[in-house]
Length: 123
Length: 112
Image (tube, rainbow over all chains, first blue to last red; front, side):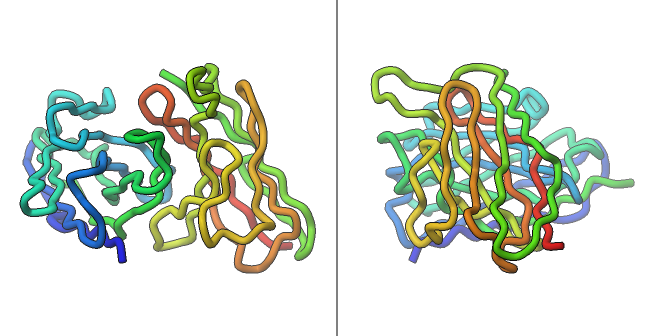
């Protein structure tokens, strides 16, 4: 069974840092692109970042570029999101997600999602 | 950036009625070499992660009831629920994954 489990969320002051993790199981983690998507309270879905299979290519939304870093450890089947210089507007539930079966070989819709981890940026 | 615009923002229907949710992309999202539209539909219920319903604009995800269908081409796409059930109450999002990734603002479906 495919599982994605996020952790690392919490309360942080503006300007602070946090590292999120997403533990993957039930599929060949190293064979799939991975994504982070966030959702502010009561708001819609916003894509944050993507990493390719071996971590050599990363891509970010303009709103987090230069502040967030996505990475992965294929030996540990874990995805990360290092979040620096956090601002109030980064407050959201952060989901990791992946296209596993719905792909064109690499890119695809997100057919598996974790349950999310809440990040609150507040003084 | 590709902007996805959904309509309506919300709709309230009686059980058994047909629901149509529209999604318009600001650019074409058809990849010529494989002739696929990079368009997906998700359902999200309160307190849950999104669930993929439709991908490649019209391919139903495994396990999704056949009352859900996707259609469209070019820049205009539609999610149709042929006969709304109580368990379909949710927010529905379209997403393009052709050029970067972006979601529509969501459409809230309620039962009258």
